[in-house]
Every structure is written in structure tokens, then in C-alpha cells.
Image (tube, rainbow, N blue to C red; front, side, top):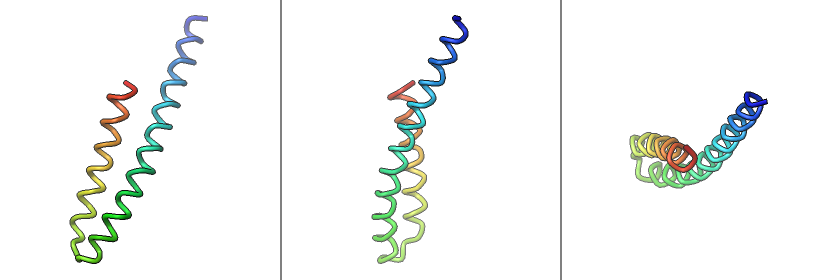
Length: 68
């Protein structure tokens, strides 16, 4: 019974983390779209790569600190 309860708790934690990550990814994608559009106008392709990396790092940090 204890193992089963622990398994359910782990599953719940993983599910919540995945949902949080999905939310962060969606928000990050919207931000990246805006920045990519701006960068394309300015022809600064390296800008988009940097924002993608920042969005990913932000998402991982948020998931670890907020739900860890």
C-alpha cells in the first residue's frame, strides 16, 4: 500500500510538472514568435536563437523552483 501511495504521488507530481512545462512552453512560444518577427524585420537571426535558449532555461528553472 505504501509503495502504491508513493507511486500515485510521484505520478501526480510528474503530471503537474508536465502541465506547468506545457504552460511555460506555450507562453515562451508566443514570446519567441513576437521576437522572431521583430528579428526578421531587423535581420538579426542570432537574436531568435538566444531567446529560444532563454525561454527553455526559464521554463526549466520555473518547473524546478515552483514545483520541486
